Length: 108
Length: 121
Image (cartoon, rainbow over all chains, first blue to last red; front, side, top):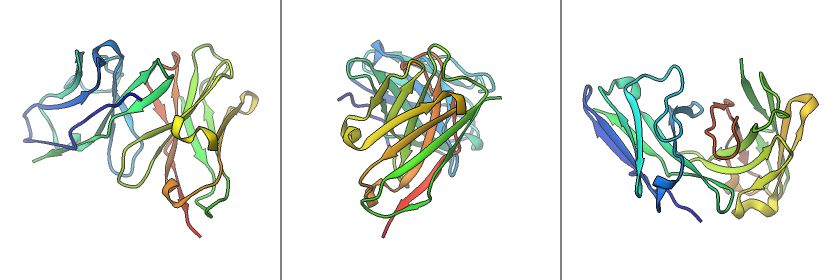
C-alpha cells in the first residue's frame, strides 16, 4: 500500500518560514491535500490539489508537489499556526485514501 | 451552510458491534461526485481512513478493516451509517465523518466535530 512519510516535528520561530514535507513514491503524480488540526478540534483543510487554498485560509499557507516530495510552506509563522499538520492523497490503484503520520509544528 | 455531525455510543464493550451515524446538512449525497468518508484518530495518533460511500452508492473500505466494516447511506434522511464489528480496545478513537465534493481524489473540505468511542469492558 502507498505510504506517506512526514517528519514528526518541525520547530520555527515566529515570523520565520516553516516547511513541512510529505514524502511518497512519485507523489508528484498525485494530488496532495493538507489539513491543520489543533488540539481537541477536527482537522481543517488548508491546501488542496497541491497548492490551492480554501477561502478563509491565509495567503501565508502555500503548497508544492514534485517528484517524491510535497511541501506545505507557512510564511511569517504566527503562534496560532501551532498545530498538527497532515498530508493526504488518494491512491487510485487501490482506491484508498492515505494520510501521512502527521507533523507537529511548534512555534518557538 | 454545510455541516456534518457524528453520533453514537461513547462506550462499547469488546466484541460488540459499533454503529455510528453521520447526519449532514447543506448538501445532497445524490449529487454527482459527492462522497462521505469515515476517518478515525486514536488518542495521540494519526488520522486513519476507514470507509467511503459515493453518490452512486459505491462503497470502499480500508483494506485492513474491510471484513469488519459496513457503510451505508439514507439519502432521504441525509445520513451515512458505519458499522464496525468485533470491537477491540485498539479501536478506541475519535471517529470523524467528512465530505468530498468531486469524487475520491477530492479533499475533505468539511469535517464533523468527531465522536469519541472508548472500547472497554
